[in-house]
Amino acid sequence: MDISVIVPTLNEEENIEACLASIYSQETDLEYEVIVSDGGSEDRTVELARNFTDLIVVSDRRGTGIQRNEGATLASADHLLFLDADTLLLSDYLERAHRKFVEDPGLLAFSGSFIFPNRTPKLIFTEKVMNSYFRARSRLGRATLPGFNINIRKEVFERIGGFRDVPLEDIELSIKLRDAGTIRYFPDLYVITSSRRLEKMGLLGSIRYYIEMDLARREPFFRDALLYGGYFSCRVKGSDIQQIFEKAFTDIERERHLDFSVKEYIKQKLDLLPEIKSISPTGLLKDTLATSTSIADIGFRERIERIDADRAVAMIKEKIRALKEKTQIKNR
View 1 (cartoon, helix red, strand yellow):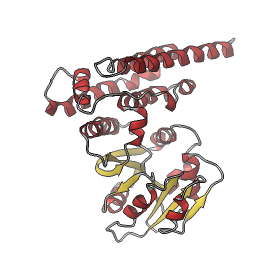
View 2 (spheres, one colour):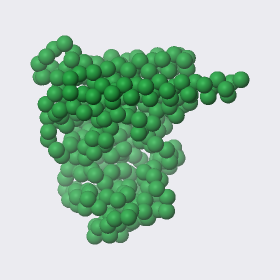
View 3 (cartoon, rainbow, N blue to C red):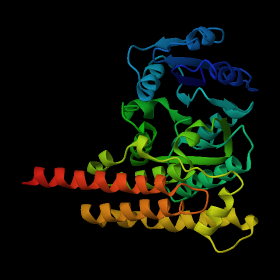
View 4 (cartoon, helix red, strand yellow):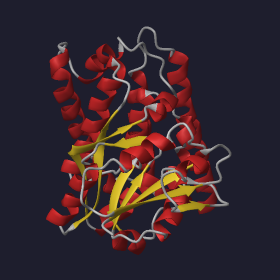
């Protein structure tokens, strides 16, 4: 067996058939298996999945990390691919992904980039922003692997203990993998994934999410202050989002310069990350709050509800204050 594809599910009847069909439509001579790891769906997810594979495990515990780990226990291949149920593979994905491991024996894990199925101006622009961010981190040796497509060697996965049953489990896994060796984010290998995560968090909220997680990972006690549900959704008309980020990232108004400008902005921010090791907890809190505020300030434009940004910043301030008080009490 060359590849084991593991798909965690929970009430995914609207997506699971398309996902599995894309896996079984691969143009490759590689031998692969598909494992569906379900968290106790209350819809027809498992029933529909049985039309494609008999390798189905249903857990009495829910959690994306739990489902991925339990699916991995059934895997018989050394190459594991964790794929979300709302994500589709192009017909040559498995062939090209497996080649990455063959050509680089020192590569422990990697993810591919992504596009959204809905080709609206706002979502196309968002692809550029987020993919530029992930590529920049990978070039700087600090790759983050988004959970909707993670390729990893089984021996490595078992050695680092798999996914933890925590929020942000993909970021947690990326941190452990970076400590263990080389991981990459490849722009030439991509999947088609749902935009529902973005629609839940908002574009600005998504960017804040990743920037703050980069800072917080240096100080474990600070992670408790950052909650997924606290990221606000910024209500912006699709035709206006490019103008907002042009003003935020660059003085150049022409859209053709935008992608380069975003990359340069992100690179400048990432260049500062090594310095964080020497920052005191108080300094880290201050810098993180400044980063959050600056990102939220992008929202202070026409047609964006300022109250959303105000609430986001206030939430972070309050969580930081409470956490500092808690830390001071422990130190007494």
